[in-house]
Length: 140
Image (cartoon, rainbow, N blue to C red; front, side, top):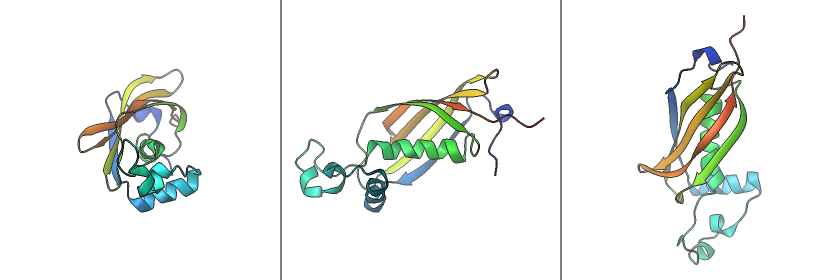
């Protein structure tokens, strides 16, 4: 399975997908990551925080960005080199999170692409940042 090659990419190209941050997903992410912060898992505790209830791990939204990069744009074969993230708003249980990546710049000499990355809930940015990726070249 091979995604897009560097030669298939163009600035402004974009891809996205939407996932629901359900309680089951958040609990599975806690188990897989080892991040069992009660803010994510314990409603009684989370109600005592400024969020007033459980929220998803910020890195869960980041994983949704990674999923777009690794499966759609450019897809299988890509190598992540760097990702910056700013967490703007909480993702709450049951939120539909749309992760989107857009190609900002292409570096042909290195087969690198810089991507604008964003996650939104109800049209509001919850996470944004920038990624640097290395994209396979088309075989000669």
